[in-house]
Length: 274
Image (cartoon, rainbow, N blue to C red; front, side):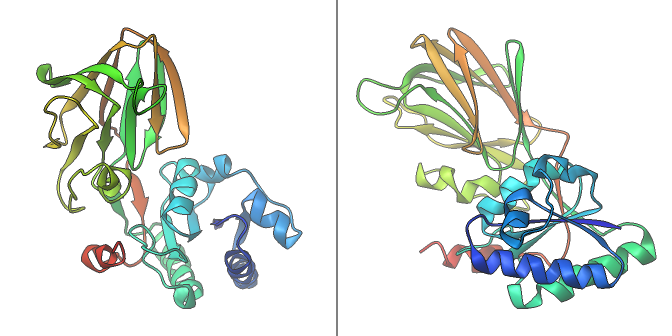
């Protein structure tokens, strides 16, 4: 069995826990990969996170940002999240329980050959001749800069029908997972993870563009007419600069995240946002 571990960068506590988990797993005959940064802190050989899709299980140690980083490399490999962050929507396992939680999944895999998993949707984004890697939290379509003198002229369509048009800093499309992140800071609504849908939120729109929750089967099309260049951003880290006029199409992809282990309490995690 192959387990890959991703730990929050620059954090001695997460690196220490990753090292302890690696040692324990190796004692029970499990092969372990560490991400390059964590391996460097422990003075052992590491691997790029982009290769972790080849593992049987990925363990993320840190906050939700670490989980997102791990998930972009995990592909459809199941992920178990250990929470050393502040909120922990994606990381339900307490660090004190991390070793036992991972060993429990190892026993499950060795007995059954698979894990019981839960799925969370990702967003697929495409334009004229390009696609972005799937987003777990959100996709943002915006001008090259925000604020006075920035933004873009946008038209938003849902399944071909015009919803809104006008000038805005941008448009944010978020999954239920991402509704608690950037979407919330833009005054978008929270979406319970059991809801089959996603949200479209205008960013400082000059005309009416209230947040809209749409069905999971919907396609959101954002047409950008001005300025000459726009930016499409997935999960705050993957960017595509596009010339305008252009259309960007966003919908639920066919490659959900798969998670294992205990499920997080959505409402308990919400309390930590205050």
